[in-house]
Length: 550
Image (tube, rainbow, N blue to C red):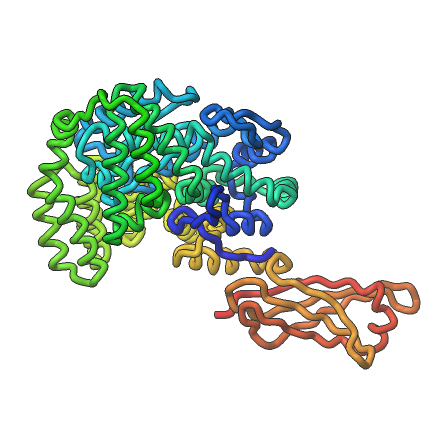
């Protein structure tokens, strides 16, 4: 078995795409080739395989005939499975002002009634300052708090939501999956057929599927299509389509200014262009301009968040200060933010992060607990408090919080810490299971999990981690060559081999390799000439012992 750290929930995959199509990423397909799909949810794998037998279908929005490898039922399931982890990965839902969330949902549902495709549309406001919005297959849609602050009217909000509704209704995300599956269908089928474990259906590997869906890049045609049909839905719902024109003009101006938050947010997946502005202007000219603009309605709905904006700006600045190793300045800013908005759990969670970084785990648990009093549905607070408890040598309290964190969003950090607790309590099998899942991550936690995984499992199953083959040198002497396939140095490698001698009796020997073997390095054990060379064809061999180098 080759351990190869992979991108997971916390390190999202950037999808490759051309001008007209949304593609599922090459990295995703490489993971399938490596067999790592075994950690994805069983239901999702089944959906992708079953999609291959679907027939061509008519796109419900455009009316065009196109491949339909992923059925509507499968889209709904994929979106439903990915929605909760996607929300967690993007900061959790914004719950401080429930009236604003209800307002956004009301506007979204008003538009969804006019969609060409009746899906189970859901709309959520995310507690994230980055200006962004996204849609998952099946009609699961989110808009960030940061984007709401940049809009000026209900019609502009309707333009954003109508655009995202079209992405879901016109199957843009599903077509990205289909194109990747079509290109490498044989690889998918082989990986699925040979996968040997369905451990932790909702673990790191499964959560990474949501990360991949979130980071799809839409091509030119998909963006123009979503603008056009989104404006149709706006007009039919009674909104003035000029809001979509104003919105794109604003986006184009901001993109030219190259604001970093916009570049990392909406513009990364929805690139604005002069072509889109012109297309929207033409579409608006063809539609009724008598619809609602909703400027006052939007301002009323946004009144509370607008008053709280300085607090969120201070929070964002405090995070930057902490990243720049300026904790005192960060504390000053975050305390100012709390005085302005004491109900925001993120602010208290940040104080927990700050005390954790200082090594004051008792104070950290107090701040995380306050954050959980305000919002007990965000994984990061459980993760922070669980890690604090672990450092305070309170394993049962740590395990409780880490498990809750894992339920909300499986991460390499939580899985690795749970593995450390299990290992410390002598629960080797449980520790191995946690480490196996966490080892897929390219994060420091994933690297630690890999080290512990190999340390625990290598003495039990050395053949899983060391490749071995036999050969003959130019003089006809037999050798055994092996390779360390892990990122961990090894020592004490022992090879056991057997052969049939001239009297038809089986002989068994063992040889030990005296030197340590670095990650990726090879070692050679020379057996010699006869009797080994004459018994070469019957020679059998295996790695019988190995340990991690200390």
